[in-house]
View 1 (cartoon, helix red, strand yellow):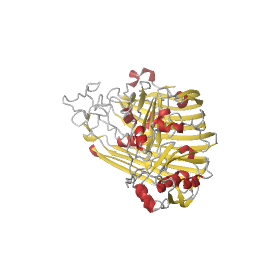
View 2 (tube, rainbow, N blue to C red):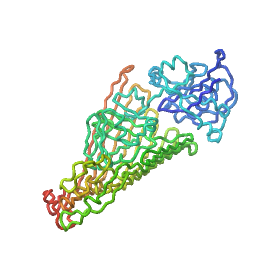
View 3 (spheres, helix red, strand yellow):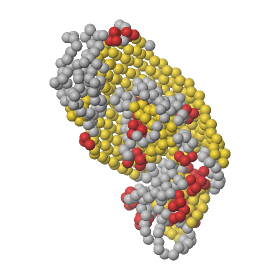
View 4 (tube, rainbow, N blue to C red):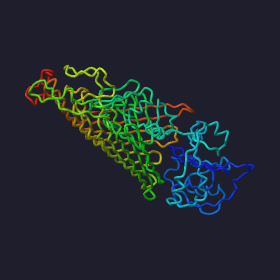
Length: 618
């Protein structure tokens, strides 16, 4: 007998638990074989997992069909079919044995045109071998030391294609991954989504170290990002559609959603990704479902959810320039109907740029005696260290079989040094001339720019199963408070900017969706967003304009929308879809620019006549 050991994997609506036995003995029917079962009353998801392990067989079922259902207690000696039927008694589900060691669990009112019936033909399945080496502990109580240790002792199954599945039989060791996405605001297979879509699953994100929005651009055709104000305001374009203006209050043309909450400003993307289940990139206009700022596309960032079984991981890496990155998470049950997940990330070091400083070059320079001279700044090696940490806590609770509540909160801090650019042209006032043999990784700025950022938020997600439809409420809040500066890449004070920014964003969305499995699928929704920005910037130009230009404003945005989406099945492979949205948005802005004249010799009004002596406000 050959034992297969693997990781038990759940992906969206399809979960397949497999236990494969390879034997040299002649083939014989084992359907009537009696086995000892010890399965306590528990959620059907975990009960089917235990049944597959104790019976050494594979089960195929649709996750949506069993979610929230409790299984019956099965203790004693039974035939496999009899034991499985007893486990499902009174649940509205039935079992169909397709082989001695394979069965399908489905609703008794199952219809042949349901999408589940196309799973075998689609070529997208996920098979995970049950760990047959655990036969000695298959009766261990959930949560026991014996059961937990065995649960952790697993590894992933190998991948192949659908024809291999049919040729090798239902007990073959396979891992044909079904990709389940929420690109159209509902769970469905990626193969069924009628838009151009790139999906990055958890394995890809981790193995390729995709931790920032610019990392996704390297993996996605037609996806470009541009860094603004250091790395504080990244901008996104898809297929050339979008804005590259990094100004704080510019709404992007590519809508970004994190944990189903809209992020109205790109500054919310400055923290690294961590403990993410998957990221979806939708190309092309998505305004019907994603709103006014999705003309270029949409991006969904879906964090990992709490699990009903204890699991954890720690990932620590060390790289060049003393870069340390650490990620960790722990997840598990809090009683019978609640689960919790804690996750965090740390980034430290990694600076690779040398700073030449001003000693021996521009230290002491001043355009006029009234203006203090350039400070003496010593040289610094390996500048640009990261100093980032963030953590998230998620609580899932199922008070009844028809109600699902998820609460999530996060906090992040960024005190990193900001890397500028190497200047090869000198400054516009002719004081600084770069060395002829200047190196590419040298920054000649006289300031050491960095950021002091705190970002936090919370999400409350309530899902109600109404039978023929599902009602979803999503309440989100995000806030960012930061002070940072960026240089002008020269060791004189020509245009050095410092920023003080506060952003608060609140959103509420309701969705009413049809139940899965119907010929017509529909969704109606309503959303409300309220954003507030408090912004200040000082542009120091002491060696150029002998003063500074100040800018400040307060902006409030309010928007509400109603939308609908429907899809009709016209036969195998043919669908007709329609979407409609109405949006109303109001913006209120008070602010402007003004002259800052600390030395009484400012020439800012000469360069910006519209500022005048009293400032320009609107």
